[in-house]
Length: 175
Length: 230
Length: 223
Image (cartoon, rainbow over all chains, first blue to last red; front, side, top):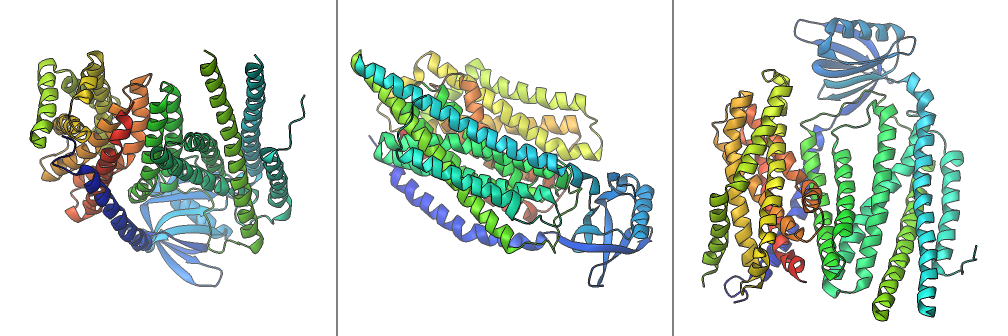
């Protein structure tokens, strides 16, 4: 009765091998061909802000003096510091007037900004967060402390259990 | 306290400890601070090696599970268990260091980004493997079923990564901090430190696996002695 | 005996049991309706933002209810020793897997198709599209493959239902991604070409896990 009609085992092995072969051939191509969908990055400062009825266009001048025109969409995320260093994060469409005011401030301060965009449509417009850089050391400390605590904790736990068990084996053998 | 013998494992662990100290010196003293992100960038030297370690661990689990099903030798089952436990610890560290890095740099702890989704599921797979093992009645079937979970988990991980990549485009990542910049200063020193950290954490992973393996072997020995006595 | 007939007999037995007790089908339909209606109570249905999370709600309802139903089904089998008798019978293990898989597939397909009109009524979405059916079929296939496999695997484990969901959920997350993203795109009236890569991906996933389940099925049954 065993596998008289289907040779399921053999067929499965062959099909599985074929599928893996296909995936090795196709999937890397698929991943690389999607690369043009990635965001591009521009660093620079705002040289002009132009609002029309439909959309808002930023002109960005980068370090080499090249000027880019970036279109702000309603989904663009803004993360901007003001002169005091307070950070303001919002979506452009939530409060368009406030967003444009903040961007004008950035232009007046000539502060360096980073833009992530995809074919000139901005995803995010951010300035360097000066406030966070101070608190960074806390995060660094917490991460390394936790890492070494957990590793050494596990190591000590293992070696203690190992010692106990060796004692126990000796006891059991001597009985 | 008793002085333990200087066997292979102890020497290996001491060697790993020395390498770890050198690595810490490189991370905190030797390597220059990266310009764009500041001091927080030093988490990278922990995060990348730990992520690599957890992926190496799932590969070890899969390989030894296949070998266990094929050869039926206890050795392979022990290796799979030890790799899964160390992998779970590495996975937890990967998630934690990643989140604590993302908070100051991206402004959020978590986004729907492909790599984050992938690493969370990888961690859950390790936990599932270990819990299933712990809750199953002891015996050969327990080992065999754990091996099956290990194999399925390892085959699933690249598929999940691919799916998460496809999925990501539906949710553009929310970046609300200083983004990575194109003129990010990556010097030779940074790359060298990163590579050295990868080597270090590979050594840490293997010493944890070694130790857990010895423990498991001794536990089995006790079970055998008790069975023989009764 | 014809293997197809054996497979159908195993599946038919499950389905007849199901028709008599109506336990699993009610679990799936009742639970998914409940999850959907809780979301209707807790969020504002008619905004555009809400429409975007409807696929996620739908698929999580299906996956949760399916897991509960799987636990129910196999606990019935263990109580009466039916499954052990099935394993001891002189049938090839593959055929047992095919049979169990078929009955699970039919159940999850029925419930995911029935949950569609409920979703559409509660969330004001037009569902009269053939793409939904196609999606339901291929994703139910993957869900029932891994569901059957893991449910049989976790028969002997303590805290069975928790353990089942612990291994089942991470393994089927790719299907969840595919289902949610495809449904989202279908709701927004996109073309077939937009979801094409997902469809191929799900087919690939189904094929791989079906074959792997077949190959490893022997190992999880051996004592």
